[in-house]
Image 1: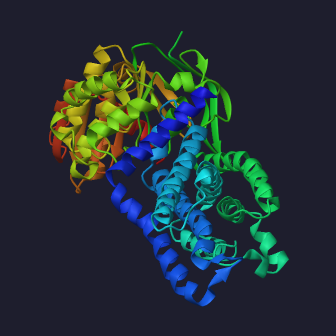
Image 2: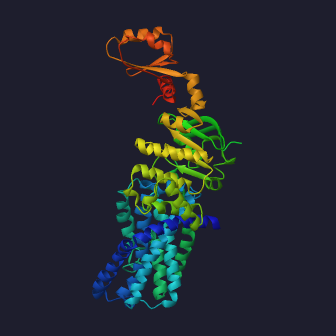
Image 3: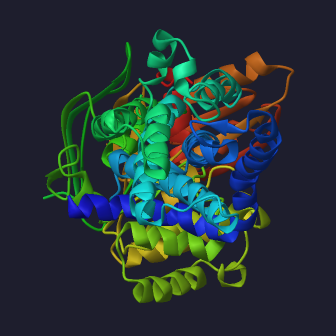
Length: 255
Length: 303
């Protein structure tokens, strides 16, 4: 197990080394968008909305925006990034001639996707603190843990889809038909109670809605029921997701 | 005990049988070549030896261990240069070696000195910091060889190591591989360059349709099938039939490929019998693996 984690860490390190040389462009891409949304929508719409559940609109969307930042970063890394390494550059094939196995590579990629998510959401948290939009300091460790777990679950899910992808064009569908609804209907911009129950329950089958619920609870408190279900969802979906991603990548690489 | 041993080795891709029950035994320190046209099953065989493809049937051991069961410990002593370029294009020349060393869990200081040594050995020390896009195809292939050596492998797998390279780059790689041979590293090579096999391989297996047609020392295979010498006769377009009749009258085995006749075991006396035959050129030379290959091509090899 320890050796297994060390081998996965070697894959993570490879990605980290590449990231180090281009980190500025990478961070601008991952973090620029959520910041624009936070202020464009938060401040702009905030004038019209005033308050949601007793807090200002920009404070209401802040925990969800963090989850959105993590989701985008992890999804981008595990679609375009992973696909390029797997199919275009044959990086996986090169690494498979070393003691690393497909399982090690997949675990390393998932941990890397989660790291990218953690970086993006972490930067957003710093911005929230700087603008006085955050005061639940005692919850920071749990918030980051939530973002890390969400990043792992999201990366595993995305990598599974990448392993089934015929080509780059397919990612357009993934982003418009899968990721955009995840942004719109998981309670990030408005309370999920406004959605029909059956409709929202579809989104509870994926990690984003749970990450948003947990984060909002850690930011603002409230009922613990949904966040606890969310934690259970993460605990189950992470090992299942890693297993499934390994299986799908193996099927893709070994005819 | 051999370094690599295969019995009744099989690999299917769907209904297609790419490797069809082959057996071989590769000894320590030997350079063993798999020869054959494209699609013969060479690459599939090499990919099974490196544990990249699980086999469909038969036995395959590397260092006495089953490759499908103990891939991690076997791969630690393996060096692979694959046919397709799979160097890490996001990294520089030297980073490629250092990152690869890390996959083998080699200490950073050891990796650094070994990387510099290998870059010198493959004449890449001037390119250390270059991006891969800035170096030529020949250099990339040399870097792939350096990368395969970073863990000090006992066994090297080289899948068409010089395909697509210019003659100068090819000779340079051959020289490096010969010096690795002197260090007693076991090598498995696939190629469709007969010259490459003759220069490097102690033994070769000629493959076609997933089977090994013959196996042995290149010089002995050639001698057994072709003979010592060959007369190569390039015929003009006119009177070709008459010329062929005179060749036939020699009583020697011959083969026609395009407008060239190859007379096997062609002895010196035959040359006088061919005077005035109407040929464009004639060449009396040593028989090579290429002759053997062409002869098989005329009969059994289908590309």
